[in-house]
Length: 376
Image (cartoon, rainbow, N blue to C red; front, side, top):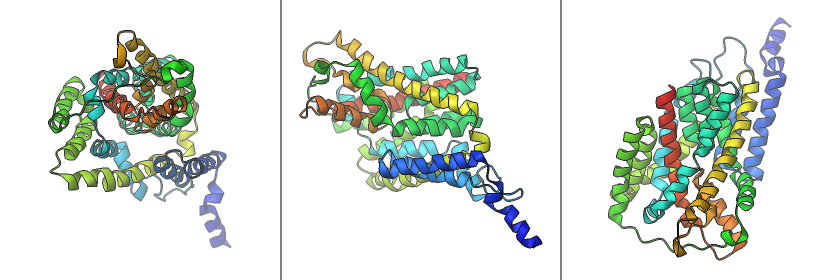
């Protein structure tokens, strides 16, 4: 009986708390959203399963969780905590991204920059709510809707908030098709949504190969803190566009990014133990994240309308493209295509929307580099 009672005391049932139960339910909801609703399944499914495993209680002396030195999960989480996984994700994104539309119509880069207003307004909101400057900077980056960048910056500035920030960032990325369309329709007229854009010019192979080198130099000199993110992004793109390293490009955009996505999502989910996650700060982070995401979408839309005041004829921009400045690649660009085709089934905006979309990725990484430099 002593052995039996000792065994029962070591089970998860004996140590389960209400907080653990809540987090287990959240993990199941994430998995359901991934499978049933197809909301960012590559992210939400491993995150949801990680939340479940991270909230199975253990007894003292057993190294199981991501916070227990010596456990398997601890070493997987090392890639998150030390900012290793986000640059590897960026390498894969660079290897699968075509910058042609951005090169053919450079003014669309401004839409990606305008959408970053969500980052800085959220930073000010977080300061107002009592977060430290470093914590506010890490929370603000959620407005870029760029999960890897949010993880990278929070690991540097606010590791204690990393779990909540990562879950918030990826949750809102998954909800892009739900959150953005109402804002897009509210801030644009039917006539504006019907607007067609001229076909982008053909971009030469030389331009495509020069961009990663020039882009790295400019971005790194402006914000050295973004070097590891943007350096890997442009390296991946150079592997793709050079055409002499196709094997490496294929590995980066397929096997490597898939492996890192699994490990990143799972370990982020496993870090959300109820004891460290269920706090008033987490609710504030989720609220600020939602606000920043909506502000970023609105900022891009309104700036596109502002640009049209100075553009003439077929150089005008369909204002819907401003929503793609939110750097959830390629989901926000797909939402632009979807909303545009609701107004006109023959109006294809996807190729144009990819320009502010990838510019938003670059913009959010530069913003992270600047915040790291001034708030560290």
